[in-house]
Length: 132
Length: 132
Image (cartoon, rainbow over all chains, first blue to last red; front, side, top):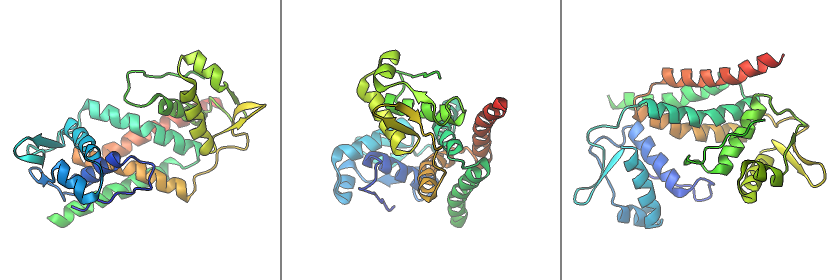
C-alpha cells in the first residue's frame, strides 16, 4: 500500500495517515488480517516522527480498524471492521452537518453535493468490483 | 443567535464556534450585514478565552464569511458570502473523501449516506422557507 502525505497541507500528518489507511481498507488494498508496518518502520520509511505514526495507529485502534499486538505487530482487524452503529451514525451526521451548512452558505446545492458523494462512493465500489 | 458549545466534545471550541456561526448563516439567523458580538463580549458571554473567539473569527474572516472592522466591529459579510468556486469544491471533496471511505469500511451504504445528507439539507432549506 502506497502512503502519500502532503506536508504542505493544513491537515495534520497523523490525520492524513489515518485517512490513507482507512481509504486503503475501503479499497480493499488492505484486508482483515493484513499486516501493517510497525510504528518504527513506517516512521522511518516515510520520514516522519514516531509519535505521529503512533498517534495515527492509536486512533485506528480506538475505532476497531486495527489491532496492535506486542508480538504479532499491527494488523487490520482480522475479525473485520465493526459495522456502523448508532454512535457511528451520530458521529457521521455531526461531521456532515458543518459541511452542508457551509455548502448552503456558498450556494452549492443539494444536487451537486449528492453527486459529489456518489462519485466518491463509485471510486471505492469500482475498486471492489475489480477485485472480483 | 444562540451559541451552544459542548465542552465535553473532542472538537476544539473554536471549531465548534466556527460551525455554529456558519450554521447560523446557512439558516439565515444571521444575514449579510448583521453584527456579531465583539471578541471580548462573546468570550465573556459564553465564558471562554479571548484567543478562542479570535481564532474562530479569523477563520471565518479568511473564508470571507465575516468582516472585522476596527470601528464598525464584526459583521457578516455585507456583500454576501462568496459563492462556491473550484477551490471550495476541491476542499469539500477532500473533506468528504475520508467520511465516505470510513462509511464504506463500516458497511454504511451510499443510499443511507445520501439520505443522511438530504435530511441535513432539508433542515436548512426548511428554515429558509419559513422566513418567506
